Length: 426
Image (cartoon, rainbow, N blue to C red; front, top):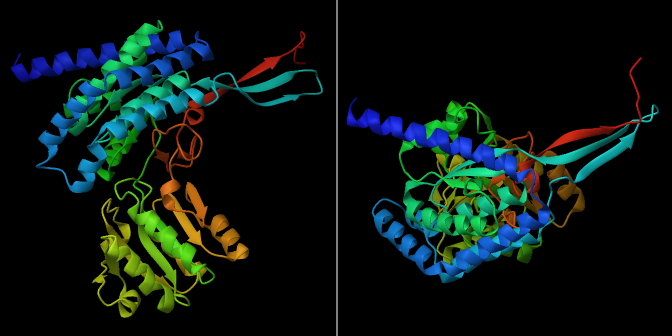
């Protein structure tokens, strides 16, 4: 046996054992109380704060190793500082504050024969989360899966491996301190891409659900190779449409914040659509706001006629998630044209209309089939914490099971409990 085949065999055995341990931990979690899970999540936040020095040191090592191959926005997603780490810990605490979904009745009814039916939330089981340079996902996923009674196997990207391992060490200490098995939250300790393939295979039937969190290539691989259910998260090709009846001041602040508050998040706007009736007056002002904030604008012919310093947009610009201070701009002939553009080029993630016309707002929310549809609100609110979910694992763009921010409730399935008094079916 060659050295490479031995390494492959060892990794396979390690990953299969990880899956079995996670399955056992999931069974143990079904016997836990909501109070115990809350204590464990609170302890996670406490341990992360206690280990701040080690976590930040690990993050500095990751940043130094990645500096030569990542862009500025990618490095920004990877970077932690004391304030961001405190925000991460506070997000874990926020998950502890939300209602525990396990065992909640979502419906109850009786039949004429006396049978009593209840639909009850139940954990999914073992969830595998595959993500790239986002160390916050390590903490968010651990807290949300525990809140929903699931075990989780985490596989972070190579760029954030040391940070993720340091966070995971704190999480494991928290689990052990309250008597929960360490395999409640497992972390793949290697950047070997073969580990991803093993997760996609389902680890011998131990993985119930896969959640990819990353770029288009990662999601495409997961969709192509997965042998278990996938909760999809496509890129955020998000639009802001400024309708003819938009308040100019609201339009300016919504567009600027949607693009420039933080360009590296999936909720950032990537395309501005503006109604031709309002564009001559308003587009130059919006463009000036964005340019002053350091944003490059790429416009179609009509937009460039109004703002000549714009770069000419190519067809590829309408389908590019920049995650950078770049915004594509198109002038459109009304609401129907805006919705047609979104239907053609959007990813079904988050889209916004800015308007003072209630009928236009209603038509937009009814006609745009995205996971999140906003009216007069920055697209940067596409975030589970802003929805009151405490945190999120991602924004689901599929149409089945869960859609939009994936919090604890979206990480449950359900079962039916039927109670009777001895009825038999004739």
